[in-house]
Structures are given as structure tokens and as C-alpha cells.
Length: 407
Image (cartoon, rainbow, N blue to C red; front, side, top):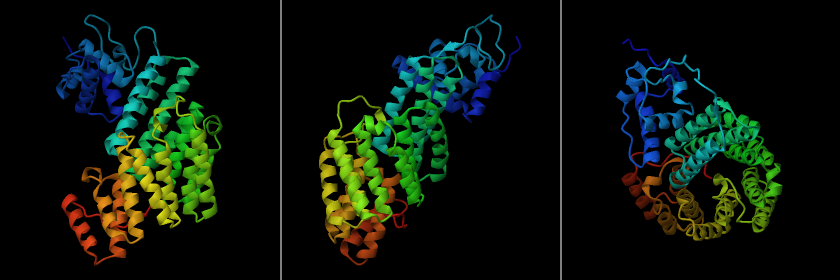
């Protein structure tokens, strides 16, 4: 019997630049979630589907295919034995109903992604996974029927996931990619009509503009986020908006506005109800994070002793939040920098050493490069400097000696 190439599956993979091995790996992860046992698909399995040698995968693989692609298997060119094949990309039978169960599934995966980001920082893997989940949320929009509420939720999820990709890319200083994710995030957040999602997008836009050396644009983006209705509904958002604004005022040299914004941030946080239901991406923010962002704002102003006190408070509070691994590492580097600027070389180097080498990537590595550059500038001949340089050579193939933006 002549084989018919599965063009629908081939087209789906081509649109996403996905290889047979990558699809097989994703399917196996979903099978493991569904059954508790690893999947057995390989690149050869996918090639047999593409060639038409296998026209109807195993049940668990069919379910995994639907979860990965967001498309029923008969819309991916598969047919039961004896059934008439569907035209590529054309669904057989009634259109699928997309509902809140699909939203809940993607929301759970987003929560896992946010947790991974807090543990590991902005790795390329986190960025890629976030972008892939955003595509899945958008693909669900094309499946068939859904209520207005569900469509809004899917746009909000897609925007949030694109924003996670933006954050991961900017965290890893992949700034061209970050700007592409920002463009998509802004559009999707607008389509969602969700002010909390829009708040996150504009907050991350401000951080990206700061990295790009555009402090006026950073402050403008932060002001957009601060003007959204979610700040009036929930003081936690208002607190985060105010402390971010403080950092941007500091970059522009406005000391009074910086300190005023820090005060507003603390007042708002004191009024926030910690038990209100909130999306997973903002659950990181609490007093420890306000202290950490205050360190950055006061360091920009050169208030090193006050910044050091805030860094100590941030680290003490983070002991109650063991999941915030990345934030703890950054707090350690910021603390080291405040001590270095006050001439306390030994404790500064000790706190920098407390960051494990496995965390020397992304923004954490950027901060360590700044610390190293400043240490060499302030005390080039000190024994602490020589010891730190030797340590860096031991743990990193590329010495942290280039001069990035300090804060």
C-alpha cells in the first residue's frame, strides 16, 4: 500500500523550526507527566509519522501530540486505519472547544517556568521554554470555538509567557532577543485587556531600557506601569512600581525623587494583603525584594553605607524564601559591592565568593564582572585583589574582567 506523507505534521514542525529529535523529546516529557513513566519516542518515531509509515500513533503519544501542538491528532494529518485522511491542516469532525482546562494546564506550566527562573536565572533554556509555551497559548486561539473570557485568558497567558522570555533574555544579556520578545509582549498584553499583565510587560520593558542605557525611556515605561488600575486595586503592585521607579530616578540623578519613591513603595507594601490571590510571576515580591531594589537605588546615589544595611536586611529575610535562589545570589554580590566601595575588601570578597560558580551567568555574572573591575580599580595591589583574581581563574574559563554597567 502506497504511503502518503504527513504534510500537516511536517508543516507544523517547519513553522516552528522543530527537529524530529526536539519533537520526540517534548512528547516524552508529556508522556512522563501523563503516565509517570518516560516516553519512548525517538527521532525515528517522528520520521515514521512524517513518511506515512505510521498513520495512527499510540494512545499516550496521541494525547502528548495534542498537548504539545494544541491540535487534535486528526488535524495533524493522522488517521485511524481505514479512515479517510484529512486534507493537511483541516480538522475532521466538529471544531475543538477550547476551555478553562486548557488555560489551567498552561498556567500550571507557567508556574513551573517561573520557579525555574527563580532557581537558575535567565538561561537560554528558560527563554526558549517560555517562548514555546507562548506559541502554544496562541495556537490554542486558532483551534476552534472558545468563549470571550477564555480567549482573553489565553492572550494574557501568551503575553505573560512572552514576557518571561523577555525577562530571561534580558537577564542573560541577549538584548536583541529581548527586544523581539518585548514587541510581542506589548501587543499580546494589549489584546488581553488584563492590567496586571500589562503591568508586568511595562515593568520588564523598563528594566530592558535600563540595560540598553536609555534611562529616560526606562522611567517612561515604569510610569506607564504605575498608572495602570491594578496599582489602585492591589498595593503590592503599587509598591513594586514605586521601587522600580526609584531606581530609574536614581539613574537620572534625582535624589529627592528616588528617596520619595522608596518611601511610597514601603507605605504601599505595608498596606498590601499577603493573602490575596495573585499570578505566580509576582509572588516573588515581598519585603526582601523591596530591600534588594532599595540597595540598587541607593547604590546608584552613592549611599553605600545605607545600601549595605538594606542588603543585610534583604539577605536575612531571604532565609525565609529558599526558592529565591537567584535573588539571594544577587543580594550577595550587591552586598559585596557596597562593602568594596567602603574599603572593606575582605568581607566584600568573602560575600562575592559565597555565590557558587554555577550561578555565574546572566545578570549575576554581569554584577560579578562589575565587582571585579571595581576591585582592580580601587585596590589593584591588595592581597584580597590577587586572591580574588586567582579564585576567578579557578572557577571560570573566561575571567570576569570586562567592564559592564555597574548596577
